[in-house]
Length: 121
Image (cartoon, rainbow, N blue to C red):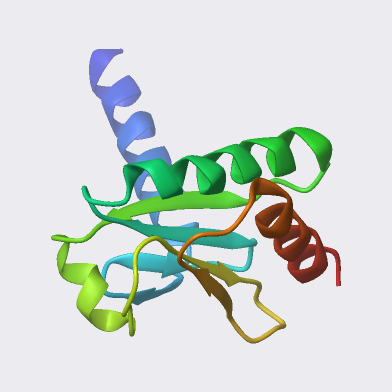
């Protein structure tokens, strides 16, 4: 009985693992088919970053479509894969559109407007 349960569980694990497709990874960050927001931060811009966090949270609460948000710190290896010149930088990715980005100091409303425009098109 125990052996058959182990075999069944092993089979299910292999079956589920094989059926999962790998999305295109760039520098360890996934470019899945679902909308993504990558927020690149550093420790020197915490006051400016607050508007980005508030805009992302408000956007998630106001919209039905879920957006995957990834916070990327300045010292993470994946930063080198993107042309980040200023912190904070928010890059918006949607599978059928080009990437959109915003950097530096902006109001929460400006960032929310960009999120709505990019992800509602």
